[in-house]
Amino acid sequence: MDPQAVRVTETHPTSGLDDVVHQRHRLGILTIAAEAKRVEFSYLRSTLDLTAGNLSRHISVLEEAGLVEVDKGYDGRRPKTWVSITGPGRTALADEMAALRALLTRHENPDQRTP
Image (cartoon, rainbow, N blue to C red; front, side, top):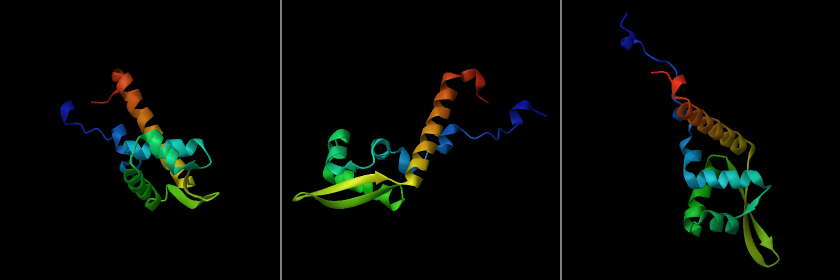
């Protein structure tokens, strides 16, 4: 059998990246939310350097996927919006980090790559 004709069945680490999570701003939202019980919208906006509209859209995508929950309320008389990561959000974030680690490992250890 021709060795070049052998198919490799191992999947590339990038196959583990989730398009919903992997987008850089959504990944930022999830990682920040995972560090706290809940995070205020304005903190996310300033930390990630996003407009309110862009941040709202990214949060909506994550919320529709069940990865974050959004709570609206008041702090005194001021309206506030808080974002918290859900159980599935923590799982998706952990899976994303594992895929990124696998990709880094593959890159740092070229002798362990399959053709």
